[in-house]
Image (cartoon, rainbow, N blue to C red):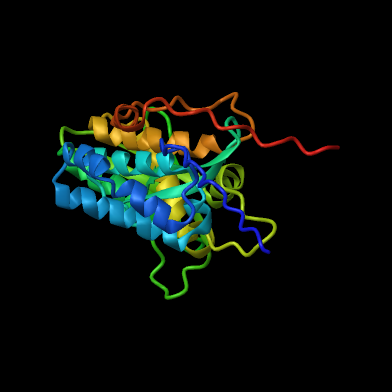
Length: 287
């Protein structure tokens, strides 16, 4: 005689957004919940809110590490994109999400970043700038600049088809009420920034935007440095703060960590899910 053993169904813990977004269906159900859509619709038209949600889902499906980030951090990125009225369109677009390990909480989080196209959109939306060019400088170009009381920047691109390798990157801004500013980074300086904040993986092929589109990411980096001191809109300053904070989040040392920029995402997340639970730290490997 065979005795059939039955087990009581396990009680599923309530999802407050700190659970890992695996698999994709779990993330989809979380982000498309009516309460979340309703909260986002208070900030922008519902159709735009649903489009941002779909954009975040598309990015996560394409990146296993992003899919492994907390649902709460992915939602926070969507809210920040809604605040700035930008599209979540990947590293070469207006804004995007980067999976990074938070060395304080020991969990993977989606960090919101504004791309160089997003910075340009926000700069011109402020109605305070005439131009905000971002350029790469090549070895055969004529290029010179100086800082100080009499700042100057001269760039005459070589007209040959082969201009040589990129040697520097710069961003400029000219204001409608007069005045201008610029920021220059040499290629070694950009590479040092990349290695510090977004080092390539040692155990797999590097398929990040830095590996596939270095010049565009370099332009975003130098534009962010300039943006931090531009007296433009609140949204423009917030974008620069998000980029600075996102860079420092993955550092093991937080001695010089950027201050977390204020965002409505905190209020919305608290309204939807209550205070975030503190995730359990990863066990320390035995020596």
